[in-house]
Length: 195
Image (cartoon, rainbow, N blue to C red; front, side):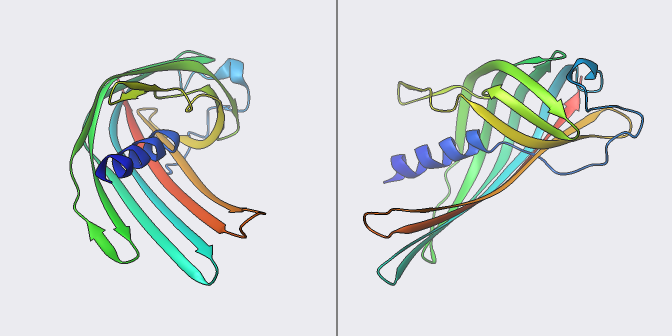
């Protein structure tokens, strides 16, 4: 069970990696992908946190899961060109899991030799990423389902030294065969400092 929960937490963390909102520098035009000067450069991860909630309802019964993930050590770098990115490094995090009111003990987890690459475009304060900020292996199996397009909100501090990604999503799915309804929420933040 712990391996399944760890894998779920890791998958969710890597698909929902984001940060707090900080004000955009008013002098930076972020609506044109060819003018991403404020973003171009090397950024060190300084902090991330993810809060995940899931409620599954079936035949009047509900199954509620809340997961909080917080970084404890960061040695991870994001390199941005005007339209492409690469990532590499390692990081550690703690996870707190509550299932139907029962808390499961948190065990620190470390990912090493993480790397990724892809392209991105910007429209205002939204970044659309084609690829993945993360690629990883879990117990020898490489996870490739994290590729694809996703959109995050970002901000650059007025002095241009802090980049913050934020992703807040709520999704709901109904299984037409069983009538099971699953609602998931993700709130995540990642903060990066310019080298």
